[in-house]
Image (cartoon, rainbow, N blue to C red; front, side, top):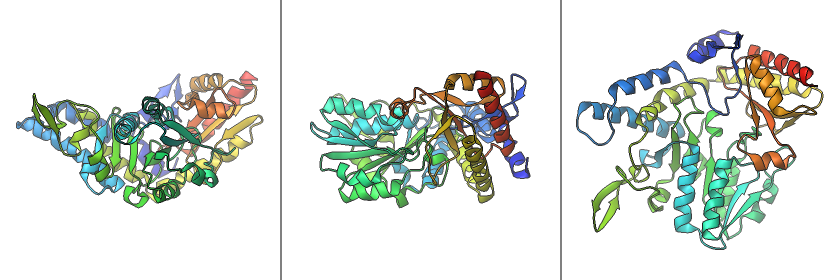
Length: 405
């Protein structure tokens, strides 16, 4: 193991854990990342500072508010939003998409309208739009993908009709790992004055995001995939759009004045943050983003490229394997099936060997069914993984397949 790997892994206590007497090889990072000690320490700090935010004048409340709002500023700077007003705290990507779907459809969607998504969406960017389309009498349309899992961009213009009121697609599929051409998508949609929401749950983890450069209208992601605590999420939205959208939930902290005769609402971002927030977890955005910036470093990133290349070549040599999502632009994520072997059996045997991978539908049932499968095995890496772990993974996979055939 090289020095960079050693130093980075020291910051993640769980990576020294053993499973069934074997050193843990954690290759389920697309589901959730492990947490660095700085994030764990922040959780401890917040529990010892504990008081509700935004409300009281006493020191505990003020300190908690400062930690919490520092997390918002860290996110704002990380994604290059114009102002903190454009950064809405939610509980995760799912909550962010549901917020936009509900509020946007309330104002802009009517019977006969259309919402455009792709065939490669996570359930979280599919089901909310199904719900609002059903309520409004609108239709959900799907941009096709090719056999490699890439968008059929040659067909996009034919889908961008005057009926389409919003486009909502993922930056990177959690099944395919293909980096989608979102900037091109946004540019073409904007030519038709159609706003675009980008599901960045995977995209935010694997590269620097500049929302102003992308010119996206909404960009959503979760903290738990980006080294932060669970129960954290972000809705970035252009300020004018967020101001125009109706409120999503009512309650404390999202109001300006409340009278029996009616209520006026708070300015952004609090307009969309009803109730007591998850302020302990929210404060972990600051150390999490510090870690994210550290691993974007070119020396660390080059190690990821080496691991990706190794797994790509090694997996393709296994007899009967089929890898889904092939592209020159791909993150270190590999979903595959093995002929004659059930995906869950592979994952269960590999677990006994200390290797954690995902199996099943991965919250993308229509996509996996599109490829004629009932489930896949997925291995997904982050920069704290190592080439030595990749070798253990390959040996364990080959052994599991031999045992099952």
